[in-house]
Image 1 (cartoon, rainbow, N blue to C red):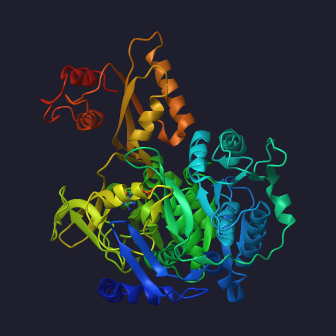
Image 2: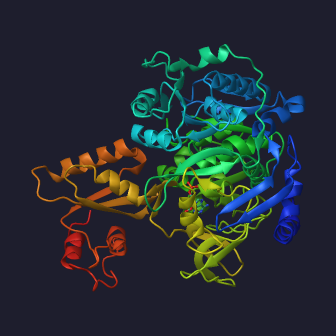
Length: 629
Ligand code: WTA
């Protein structure tokens, strides 16, 4: 399934458009199926109803693990690099992975977890986080991983939305110089989660935790009791594999659902082609398993390909800003995949943190999560890739399951800031506000995809209508990405950023509505509006305008309380970078907040605010400009 030349890419692309079913059938045939599919694809974007590999039966873990055992069981699946550089690495072979996953799968069974049940995973970046996902998949349970930085309230909302029965967690987590109390947070969350019957706790930090008798169990003790064999549950291609919550323009985060067959085929295909992974190479994706990048390109894509990967527990700037490069040299990493925000932060720290390292094992560099600005691209290319490693700027989303637009390493000619060309099977189109296709090159519009690929979102958990209205109703018969995009004279794609009310802070998707409702929980705030503004390191920062009527508290006190509220309700990643206390917000006569004006103020573009004649009270704008922070 690996494309080797530009010619092969062009041929594959053409075939994927002319005969998509034949194209994907050939790729899917390379996997282990309990029963092959009857029909490759059945779809419409109106329902939407998208079925791939219909009536095919499989278990993704047999493809991630068992399939490799006979010939490559002693190959390394993971090298774990702990938070402290001096601490011991762990190396996990495919055979060991098999045993660990099966034991854990049996523990899940002992908790009465069955096919279709939901299991919440709230873990640090340790191999057990990956075992947890695979153990769920082994028994046919649907995992819902919650990023370790989210608050108890966020965990609770996610558990209740999908009625999870079990939580897999750890006592605590190390992240840089911080120690996070994961179990305490879970305890707090599950107080109001009646569906939870059991909590399994891995000892990572050894801190003392409360274990509720009959509900909470120790991970290692339970695993030791279990056999290293566990028959894989036979799943239908379209059975859900996992739920991953993500933020959108409105309301609470929604549970994006991916299914077993299509997700398997597409993550493996895209992993092997984008990174051009070669046997025995060492691959490192620095994402957290709590995000889609961790799902597709730490857990599933690499394991399906029999790859060897690094799992990294720490952060880029601990103990200092050379940590990534120290790890690259220590293990001789060949393929390195990270986010622009990390690159910008390390660039800002200075070259003294790069110079001590050779970095000569690197062959391919990757970028994901947000647009990479040209300066960061050049810095990465020159100082890390030594001008010999291609940078694959991979554009995709939680909803797409896998990379859709990206160079194929050493095959596609690069252009800084451009995700370049679609992968085979991906048919992007640009449309104007009315949904009319914008043809030709040298154009810009809203990015849509007009044909399904195997790992496209199937539904939003428990609310299919929300899936339809969010992604398939803006433009009839198109999947709408929410991103703006330019197609240049060469037909290359450059993603320009979100065109909706989603803000991308350090590569994390944050919905303004969600942050506003958290801010409004602070007692003195009567209304708020959050917008994004350009931030040197984070890409975008959050700027909150908050209406606070007369109070005896100081502004500093109120701002602190607002931050505490957001931290408690969502988590530290959503804390506003700037808070401005105001007496009113610019609204139209019909009461709609004019975010366009707030965005300009936040960006510091104060001279050209556009048409303000429809404002109910134009004096508000002057006050806001004066009080800008
Ligand atoms: C943005 C992350 C520009 C985009 C995999 C998208 C990017 C959102 C890129 C999805 C890229 C991701 N260039 N923008 N290479 N990759 N984005 O769901 O706005 O966390 O819609 O998935 O990140 O974020 P998500």
